[in-house]
Image 1 (cartoon, rainbow, N blue to C red):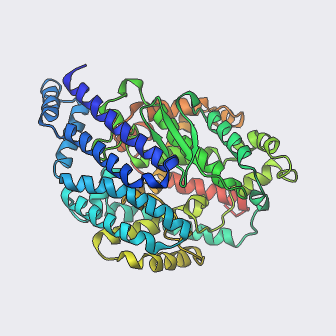
Image 2: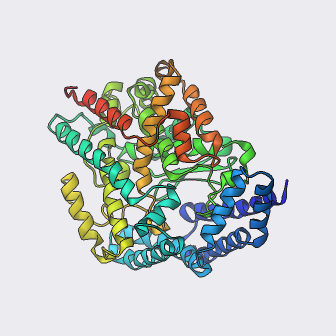
Image 3: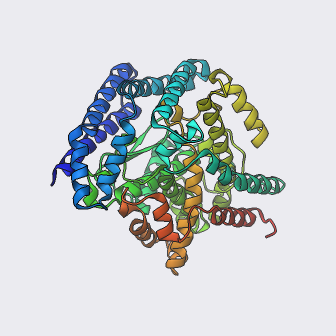
Length: 500
């Protein structure tokens, strides 16, 4: 192990500790620990930054590059030190403390359905992120600096170009679908004991390839996946006794994230290729969009497919015989693909999901630009939900307070969900071209060939290749919404009996 690798390993260790503190705060920590936990996370963040910005670390990276100019790990480390070197130390500390305090304030505000309880924290978060954007630098829009943290190269202008055809397609198809009779779905909202849900969710995660020797499933207010190297990759979900979809598809979604992290090349453990050094986050996925492509692929392309439910509905029915006594696999498949405009993003169907993302992107872009005041968020949010989905928002908990993201400082991350949707279809179509037997394998509930293909083309590489490089290598094309649009159109025309 050379000096650069040794120092990188220490930085990654600290980032994993930071992840562990975060996981505990969101799953186990009592409310009284909020303030001290924020201070603890700020201290660990400062220690990681101290090592990252130490002159000796940059010197060790430059020494490697002199001998190997193409060394990607050293080059990525220098890019991170350059970016973070522009961010004031106090700003990093303020953000670390605020993240912990704001998360707890969000939990309390959501429980009380009172945005006013969270607004002061969000205002501070927006101000600090605006300072962060200014420190990092941007060419056209301050939002671009934040976007680049989560999806390198993504810009506000690029998003407009991506969103325009999606919005036109989704709104048009939604109009057609809503004119047709809805599938029966009453059985999804019957009482489903939580213990039974958890047992089935664990089985479903393992079925896809999630290794419980290196993972676990816990409960949190908002589902997430987090890792402390590929050897310890944890997922959470939330259970609702009277709604099966939330925990089921939330678990499949987080399982997709977990498969990515568990599939990272073991050689990259404690390395640059398992560390987002600029974002100060221990993660092996190369970008948020790439990560979302895998959660959405496993949740939707596989978990909501006809083949999946023809293979596994019997297991679910055996787990809940009374609740599903009058239901068959075809009924269940159509029910979980029902288009029903929803107030809640994580419960949205595939067709309306991106409309939720576009709302959030517009809001956070305007917040960062100073064109929208935090106090006006509920009014703006409620108006857009009415305009886009035809729904009236009854309270803040089911409106502007539903997502945890802004409380954790993830301003700029929402677009990556739609980017992930687009990438998921590109990767899936490429796998289908390369694996002629894939559809029949999936019908037989054999997920190993798909998992192996995804591991070979995506997971194994960690952060050693960019999202663009992975797309080009695996699919031969850069980001392209057409496969995604074709998939959605084909699925919903079949489910709703629409003409082709």
